[in-house]
Length: 122
Image 1 (cartoon, one colour):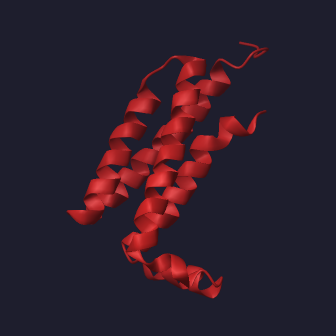
Image 2 (tube, one colour):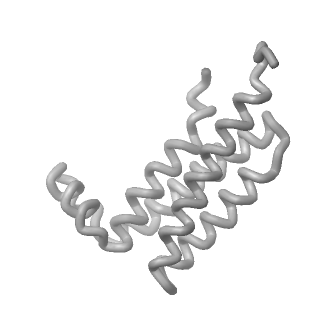
């Protein structure tokens, strides 16, 4: 297994943490503070960090698409990424739905990759 197969999962995890901090969830903010990462709680750092993790997610989903050739996970991830970034500024509760969409896209991508893995017995 290559590390590139897990890029979407890394991106989703980072996006989840960055979005949680942008939304001001007390648990996320407290954990970062306790870990000595309180400097990350500023929007000037969180928004670019969120964009980087969303880009990692979409790159991982794109690499998955190149393997399984099913557009569903990539489309769901792309739409969820845009909604997540916009909803942080417009209407924060929608961000939770977008995060769920990113998680679903990552799971779907993993399932589709596994289905077309070489040597898989059907």
